[in-house]
Image (cartoon, rainbow, N blue to C red; front, side, top):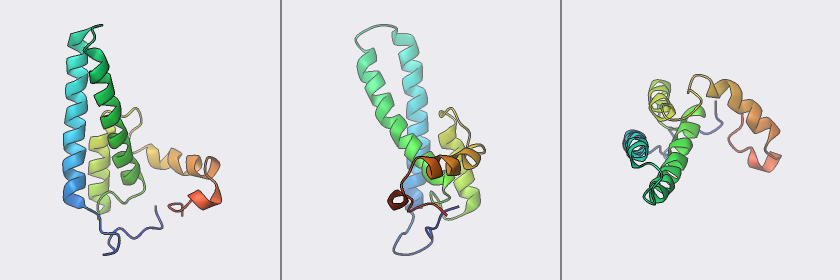
Length: 117
């Protein structure tokens, strides 16, 4: 889906790092949700929410790369890693490729469309 060649040596995909980040970040987000559900309305909730927000942005970035087909060198692995990251995101990896190109066309200027087809 992208004009970027994920197998190029100049743009080598850090597959091991992406795999580790996808799994660790997803597990950490679930863990933070579990802890937050038990803490209730206490001052401890603020740092938990801040950590969740930072990790959620990482999760979103990984899911975004999977949507464009550049998170991993193979389509199958992109889909699997995208699914793992999408578990905590309110839009599945199977629906994102349908909605995301339209978003890119409507909300980006020509100079920002480096990853558009």
